[in-house]
Amino acid sequence: MKIKGTIKPKEVINLVDGGATHNFLSLDLVQRLALPLVTTTNYEVVMGTGISVKEKGICRGVYFLPLELGNTDVILGMPWLGTLGHMEVNWKILMMKIKMGKW
Image (spheres, rainbow, N blue to C red):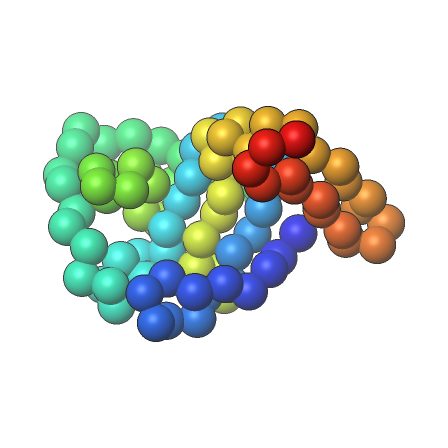
Protein backbone atom coordinates (compact mmCIF):
# COMPACT_ATOMS: atom_id res chain seq x y z
CA MET A 1 0.00 0.00 0.00
CA LYS A 2 1.45 3.39 -0.98
CA ILE A 3 0.77 6.41 1.18
CA LYS A 4 1.98 10.01 1.08
CA GLY A 5 3.87 11.44 4.01
CA THR A 6 6.48 14.01 4.96
CA ILE A 7 10.01 13.78 6.28
CA LYS A 8 11.25 17.15 7.43
CA PRO A 9 9.32 19.46 5.10
CA LYS A 10 9.75 17.12 2.10
CA GLU A 11 6.81 15.11 0.73
CA VAL A 12 7.61 11.41 0.34
CA ILE A 13 5.91 8.33 -1.06
CA ASN A 14 5.90 5.42 1.41
CA LEU A 15 5.28 1.80 0.49
CA VAL A 16 3.94 -0.29 3.38
CA ASP A 17 5.23 -3.78 2.59
CA GLY A 18 4.47 -6.68 4.92
CA GLY A 19 6.76 -8.87 2.83
CA ALA A 20 9.84 -6.67 3.35
CA THR A 21 12.19 -7.98 6.03
CA HIS A 22 13.84 -4.54 6.40
CA ASN A 23 13.02 -0.84 6.06
CA PHE A 24 14.53 1.00 3.08
CA LEU A 25 15.18 4.60 2.03
CA SER A 26 15.75 5.61 -1.57
CA LEU A 27 19.29 6.76 -2.32
CA ASP A 28 17.76 9.95 -3.72
CA LEU A 29 16.02 10.67 -0.41
CA VAL A 30 19.21 9.96 1.54
CA GLN A 31 20.94 12.63 -0.56
CA ARG A 32 18.03 15.13 -0.37
CA LEU A 33 17.92 14.85 3.44
CA ALA A 34 21.73 14.80 3.72
CA LEU A 35 21.56 11.70 5.92
CA PRO A 36 24.90 10.24 6.98
CA LEU A 37 25.58 7.01 5.12
CA VAL A 38 27.84 4.57 6.98
CA THR A 39 29.76 2.15 4.78
CA THR A 40 29.34 -1.50 5.76
CA THR A 41 30.37 -4.78 4.21
CA ASN A 42 28.49 -5.58 1.03
CA TYR A 43 25.08 -7.15 1.44
CA GLU A 44 22.52 -8.31 -1.10
CA VAL A 45 18.86 -7.40 -1.19
CA VAL A 46 16.53 -9.70 -3.12
CA MET A 47 13.92 -7.47 -4.75
CA GLY A 48 10.29 -8.45 -5.32
CA THR A 49 11.25 -9.23 -8.91
CA GLY A 50 13.72 -11.87 -7.68
CA ILE A 51 16.75 -9.81 -8.76
CA SER A 52 19.57 -9.47 -6.18
CA VAL A 53 21.04 -6.00 -5.71
CA LYS A 54 24.39 -5.49 -3.94
CA GLU A 55 24.59 -2.60 -1.50
CA LYS A 56 27.17 -1.47 1.04
CA GLY A 57 25.79 1.12 3.43
CA ILE A 58 23.28 1.88 6.16
CA CYS A 59 21.65 5.02 7.56
CA ARG A 60 22.40 4.34 11.24
CA GLY A 61 20.41 7.15 12.81
CA VAL A 62 17.18 5.82 11.28
CA TYR A 63 18.15 2.16 10.79
CA PHE A 64 17.03 2.04 7.18
CA LEU A 65 18.97 0.46 4.34
CA PRO A 66 19.59 2.80 1.38
CA LEU A 67 18.54 1.36 -1.96
CA GLU A 68 17.53 2.54 -5.43
CA LEU A 69 13.72 2.46 -5.18
CA GLY A 70 12.52 4.13 -8.37
CA ASN A 71 9.35 6.16 -7.70
CA THR A 72 9.11 5.18 -4.01
CA ASP A 73 11.00 7.08 -1.31
CA VAL A 74 10.53 4.78 1.70
CA ILE A 75 9.68 1.11 2.16
CA LEU A 76 8.21 0.43 5.58
CA GLY A 77 8.71 -3.28 6.18
CA MET A 78 8.26 -5.66 9.09
CA PRO A 79 10.58 -3.76 11.50
CA TRP A 80 8.26 -0.73 11.24
CA LEU A 81 5.01 -2.70 11.09
CA GLY A 82 6.06 -4.63 14.21
CA THR A 83 6.13 -1.39 16.21
CA LEU A 84 2.45 -0.74 15.54
CA GLY A 85 0.98 -3.60 17.54
CA HIS A 86 -2.65 -4.51 16.86
CA MET A 87 -4.09 -3.19 13.60
CA GLU A 88 -7.04 -3.76 11.31
CA VAL A 89 -6.41 -3.93 7.56
CA ASN A 90 -8.81 -4.15 4.65
CA TRP A 91 -6.67 -4.68 1.54
CA LYS A 92 -9.67 -4.53 -0.79
CA ILE A 93 -10.27 -0.85 -0.03
CA LEU A 94 -6.66 -0.13 1.03
CA MET A 95 -7.59 0.86 4.57
CA MET A 96 -5.41 0.44 7.65
CA LYS A 97 -6.58 1.26 11.19
CA ILE A 98 -3.95 1.67 13.87
CA LYS A 99 -4.86 2.58 17.44
CA MET A 100 -2.49 5.21 18.82
CA GLY A 101 -2.15 5.74 22.57
CA LYS A 102 -4.23 3.89 25.19
CA TRP A 103 -6.76 1.27 24.08
